[in-house]
Length: 386
Ligand code: NAP
Image (tube, rainbow, N blue to C red; front, side, top):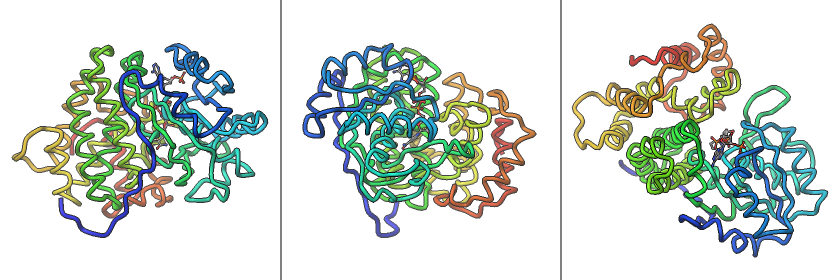
């Protein structure tokens, strides 16, 4: 794809990748602090043995193990209060995107005064942040290589983002062994998040030649390995490929941001409890049929990555939807959002709210109207191809 404009590429996170590399946690933390604050979810890090292993490597650590899925401002403030009170000087995240994002918010709130909501937006951390070491145990969000903490504002139940270069984790320890215990559904849904982020990066107004290259690589790997990882969780090659693809999808959105897929998907998650990655996945076919009309060459590149064909014959709009649906079939997931609990009578209201907040789709190409957003929701609910 042509280099159309000037760009900047920033990726300060040191990535350590490899089966068993979690054993290097103490080395990763050594130069960053003496009293780590470990942030994790309610069950899985303990269940897979990662929390006990971390505590045996770093016995002076304090632990906050109460992060919920789609975490809120109240949790971040409570955790940051504990971190400050205990005098911790670095933060370790062990878990999926939810604990990683809370760890970043804790790192910010420990050295910046005031409520979490004061920092929604871009570069508002006047005092920087504590260093963060991220240890993902899902393979999807790529939060380990992004400057974002996505947090639900408990005041109005909307997802908002703290964006700051200071929030890029200093180190990301990527040990695919930690993802082996993921149940099939978590594997599939988080994997769809990686796919979504990579696809959105390619059509984002902020795409760069570097992010394009990374995104196409991530798409190919998800297509080749997500179904394998879902079929056999013990398949370490598939787990490694997915963990790598997810990290790379984080590198992509760190540059490009996300698009209308994410802006719309949050409603599925917050209103119907649909897992974040699945919510995005359910919107890919309608949005990329639209994107294909706006940026046919970009969507053609996605189709080639998904299909493995160098000269697909059908139009990119039709073919991209067929490729997404084929992947959903392979994963044994219905592409119809109504099959996952979406109530179609709510969609017009969601469309109105999304349309009223263009910041949510500032990276989206094309002319976006309330009517279009509602049509995307309706197509997603039915799981059809326009
Ligand atoms: P998650 O909410 O972190 O975790 C989902 C579920 O998987 C939880 O029940 C968790 O259990 C469990 N789990 C995690 N690792 C496991 C393992 N190895 N084995 C078994 N179960 C495991 O899900 P996620 O999809 O990774 O993260 C979603 C969040 O990330 C959303 O809030 C989204 O907005 C955010 N996000 C952030 C960025 C960013 O750049 N900052 C990018 C994309 C998405 P426990 O709760 O017990 O740990």
